[in-house]
Length: 235
Image 1 (cartoon, rainbow, N blue to C red):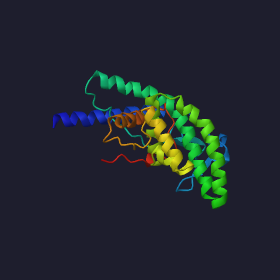
Image 2 (cartoon, rainbow, N blue to C red):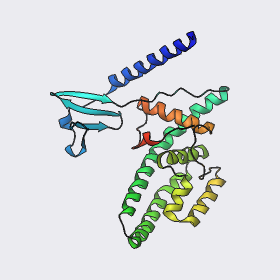
Image 3 (cartoon, rainbow, N blue to C red):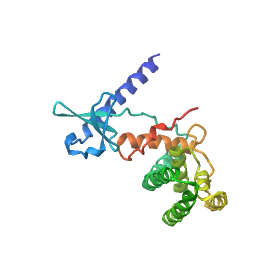
Image 4 (cartoon, rainbow, N blue to C red):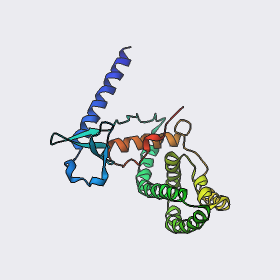
């Protein structure tokens, strides 16, 4: 019981400390300085600007700038069996930070493409899809080939976390099954399985990636992507 009380007190202290650190570090301009088209309205009719990087809503109340922070998710670092595990965790953090900007760009373009295709007729969809496929292939195939094996694995896991689809499924949907088949062969040659899902509870590397994502988002080192909270880690 004593140990449980100490653990609970420690968790409360860490929560308050992190929240205080985040509040102190927020840089907020008056609401009038944000572009009107970027302002949103909450359920009470109040206007606010949402700062994605700082994960905060910026309000103007009685002439004062008010910052409302998002709820943050505190996750403990995974249990390390040995020093090799610990070293691999921090090695993955370097890879995550290198891959993350490419992932954000790819995710945005993938979502934009899906939105555009959904509003088209079948004939226009096929024509436009072929055009965009070539553009995306020219832009990303070279970049993806330049990734190391570990970076390629991290990229595929991030895409699954954000879309609910493996990279194989994304390629199959956009470029056809035959193309996805050959991309999978390329991935296997590079020891990257583009058919593998993201599962932080059953895959040790995925557990590390999830822990690193939450830590980097909370600290402000990485910008959360739109919808990042939609992924539910369930056992």
